[in-house]
Image 1 (cartoon, one colour):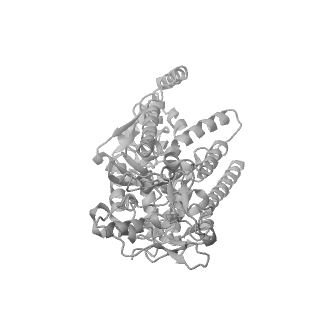
Image 2: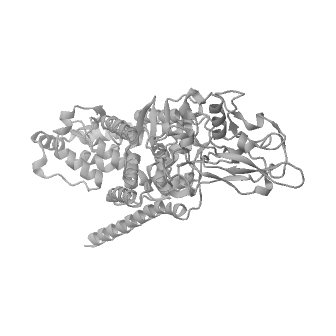
Image 3: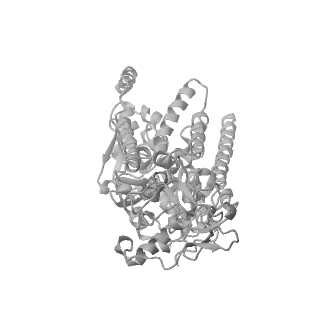
Length: 326
Length: 268
């Protein structure tokens, strides 16, 4: 339970703190001490990293994820364009072979603005809530959201320019995403308009793909340029209320990235590729309070850390609910 | 000491940067208020649409109504309509709603009730009110007939012609007319067509409930001393603002336009 509360606090923007001595299990403490004493590990780490430099690990999960992401968005497009009617609507709300689905954040905005909920919306919202609870909340972000894919490309551009010292990343205070979430909820309720939908790149892109492009794409392009030249992954990291909504849903989800301390070399290869590196604080030497741990609610289950880890200490897997709640 | 000072400066810069991001993004989203408050665009909304404010609030911007429309009458608004981005509308001059689905498919498709589920039939809708604005351009007023394609060969708009195919709407350009006195607005009015079908004992889909209780449009004879038969279109109580009269009207600009400012009081 403590882990979950901590994970939600980090999701909302809290800084990762060094755990208190009493938080560690005896087993974890012993393992930390053992790792510190074992001089042979340093050599092994250097060998490992040298090997990795020569043999680039395949981005297995990224390939799978991009395939799924493109397939889902393509299914929306062909359902309308070819009239095969499998997945009708857009990412904000849709019908999958007739079953209602509603994006949780869009549904929330509508409920707050309109202050009435029809049965179909309730059904769609509940279906999606259960689905993304099972599949890990922010899994939506990296496996479905079309903006995420563009942002990954923008991230590549940013990293390339940063490596040539042309641009520099300007981080923001992560708590601002929680502020955005609250502000947009209050704005929807007070103004009676779904204010956030106006600037939601997820909605804009999904509609642009299905119904054709428009000037709204200028806003999406602006966000991407901002991310390339000023702040890496800014929208997904610091702004998007959709991500926060799904993060809260996924806080107690059975799909998790798991971490095993015993095999970890603390090279932090995982943190380099992570969209939300604060969730990987446990991999820092001496931070893991237990041998087996779950990566927190802000994790999008993109699997890049799983691929990046040279020692397979991180894995994406379904776990029992009992384990999560312990 | 120097390090903590540097740290403090860094934290300060981060705070200011974050505040700027907050103001920037919330500010950008609130720009969406302008087109709504300023009423930059007056749109005819799909059948069953709630009052404009409630409609914008309740619409989840998914376009499911767009997908089910057999004549592709429904489009989604772009970002220049602010909070109305992704919200459906009908450009009646280009493609009006001719109710060729009979069952108000867009209403059935709407997941949030922004197109109210309280209505079932075409005559219960309330999209706009037709207004005669260019009477002197009206062919009937001039006593003229009409031959050919109502909107020219290039026009892409579609209508359902019962005598061609009950289920498949065709292009207006594929259905040339030859009329002694132009009466296209009345002839193609979906409400008037239904009333005629009901009078002939053949209500749409065999359902008596589909029969509109009131007429929507008629041609009224104008008294003249030159011996030419002239008529003017008159909009009646039963008009639901579907826009077919505007779409089919041959002159440019159309004699009849849709006025959505005073309609949509919700279900009657």
